[in-house]
Image (tube, rainbow, N blue to C red; front, side, top):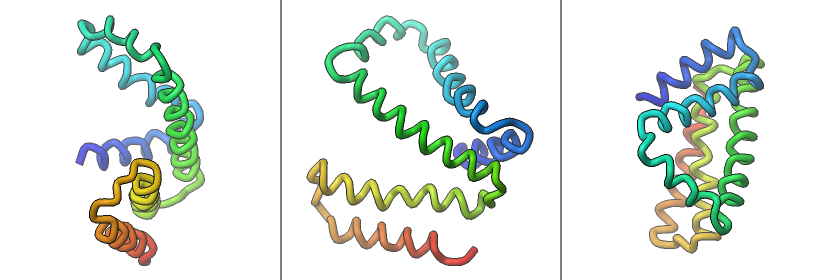
Length: 127
């Protein structure tokens, strides 16, 4: 429910604000709020600067930023949120396939693939 409220709020903001400028603001603000609420844990942030952790965070950030830019530009160009949101949830399909390949999560793979296929059909059905 929180996600739905956030997405509808984002659509309202995007109607009056540039999506490329909005993305950094909407990404930085939650981090700042969490840092304020949990300020005692801030010294542990140095753990993220060790080994390959920072590289993994950087790679994830690039993919997330690209996804956010595409999503908000689609909203800005007039894509209906009632169709765009389920399409973005179709990332479930990619997650199932990639987890089977890279993480070797093959338990119940038939059930997972069937679920992913049903999600695809649900997304493709006309609204």
